[in-house]
Length: 325
Image (cartoon, rainbow, N blue to C red):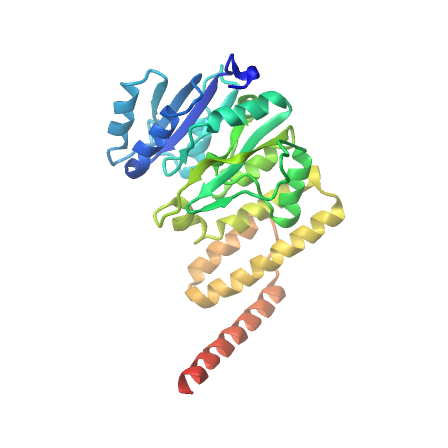
């Protein structure tokens, strides 16, 4: 073990659970298998209706480092994540989230803490991750264990490049969590990336060039079921630009980035109306603009609607002609 970790800083590992029984054993076992030993494991049960609590209590009875918190009432996704952060120990120096679908490789906490101990100004540590079957979060030049928080945030805000991954992919300095009443914005899903940008207002970014976490992709995940269906990732990116650009971008960079994202928004708005034929879903998408305090540009929308309609007609005619040949 690294010399600096002989006296291991205390780490709060955190797992929010709602009906996660299918993968929960694997998740908990990955924490128990860590080479790092000075941790507590806080598992927050959000009124699960499957046997998640039974699984959690089984492990809690075997290891007194596991602490179970049962929510008194069911909380919506983002509210529950903020509630879970409030359960970590006041003594912890770092917080490592691992969601029930995901798991950690054995050296994950050791390697991430090692980087943060070496660079005290770092507030977030990430690494390569196994994203289902592919290795992701690459692109940073090796070794680049230390990176300017401002530059990492700028890369995301200007071109969408993110080295954060999912909440399971990163280690966060606990003092940054305790400074915030809410880590995640609760107005929209997929708020975790924006939360990372917010943390980088006050800190730098660490990275480990090893695969240390696993993110599972499956049809029942929140990402697949809700976030994609509601354009939550675009909503989150617009929110991040509007909220954090003043801290990281000049006016020209901000206007250019916002223009690019708004172009995507109006294209998706037109495509969704043509695909779903639902005024209710259309109104739900318009609510994104209301929440972000942006005006709905009718002419711009109509231009995109006409263009997307023409593209659909052209595609349909092309398919019929190919079939007729």
